[in-house]
Image (cartoon, rainbow, N blue to C red):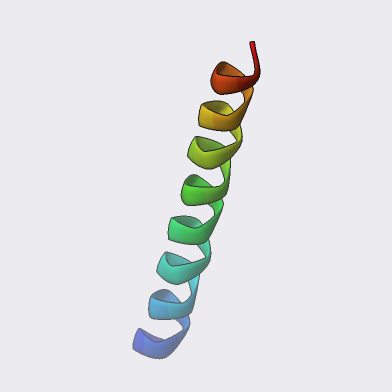
Length: 30
């Protein structure tokens, strides 16, 4: 259960990073 939660946390972190990066790129493009 601990391992699964760790993986879920990692995926969430990657997702947030991707969204933030996309938002940053979009702001820079404008």
